[in-house]
Structure formats: structure tokens, C-alpha cells
Image 1 (cartoon, rainbow, N blue to C red):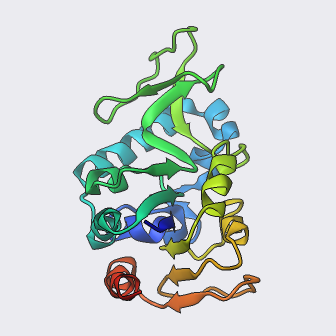
Image 2: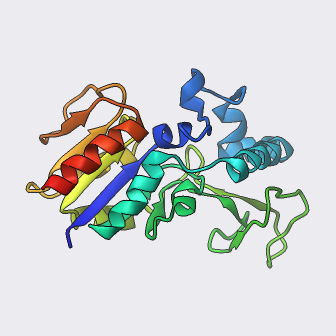
Length: 228
């Protein structure tokens, strides 16, 4: 069974009604990202940060996977599929994908403010000020904020190097280090990129572009993959 590695981004979640800051000129639900998605923001105004992510969880709980999510889950019948996602929501898991690596953390997890190894599942949507880890520190969202290291990058590189087919869905490859993953594919690995706008720049590899939304693009790509 061939190994299909999929890198997904904001475009696939957008079709489930989950917005990102890139949809609105650098604002995320009316907030500049520096107000809600940086370590400095957490120090400056933790109440605002908690409220912001609590609202994101409310949205994600009611959101449903779209066709792109479900096709990726369905492809497990034909391929050994691993999804590497830049998204923090749980739509891939809701759709039934078995192997999902979250590069930028998970919305429904919290972690210690003093020991990032202490990670806890969040029941429901609310994380409160006063919710503490076992070491007595305030719990924060288990999200990789701007300016923080991406600890799952090394495992993602290892997975990418094993790919027989590499697929990019819903991301224009503008966010680093995730965008660099395409460079770790083998020279014999075909690469497909689904996005409404063909990204500029040179990838150093031949890439088959499908200029389409995530859902309709995945319908087209599934037909291509199952013919080969």
C-alpha cells in the first residue's frame, strides 16, 4: 500500500466555517494576531487570550467536516494515509482520519505554562483562569503561537521523507516552517497542490496544481489517484 502524506491548511477548515486570520487581512475574528496568538499576548492579557480560544472551541464543536475531510479519511481504504495539518481544529479526526499530526498544536488541549510536556485534554469548550496543571501553574492553550518553536516539525519531516505521494490541500505554502516540507519529498514522489490560487514562487520540484477549493479539488484528485 502506497504512503500518501497530506499537508492541510486553513483552506480546508474554512469550508467548515472555521475562519483564520489570513481570511481578513491579518485580523482573526476582529483581533490582530499579536493580541491573541503570541507568548507576549499571553503575558500581557491572558484573559483575552483565554476568551479568544474559548470562542474558537465553541465554533469547532458545532462545525462539521466537509467533503475534503471525508475524502481524505476515505482514502485510507486505498493508501497508508498520514495527515500533517497546520490547523488546530479536530475536523480531520471527526471525519475519521486515523493518523493526524498537528504541527501547530490542538485546540482541545491545554498545557502547563511552566512545563510544555504537561498536556491535558479539554472537556467541552472552556478553559478558565484558575485551571492549573499538576505543578500549580495556569493552563494555557496547547497552541504553537507566533514566535514559538514548532516541536512536531521533526516528526513531520520524517513522515514526509517516507511519502510515495505528497498532497497539499488548502494552503498556499506561505507559512514556515510547514511550507518547507515539500522540499523533503523524494525526487520520485509526485506532488499535488489544491488551492484556489496557484501559489507563486519556485518549489524546486514538479508540482501538479489543481486550482480549486479544497472539497471540489479533492473530488477531482480522488479520481486521479484511484486511476493510477
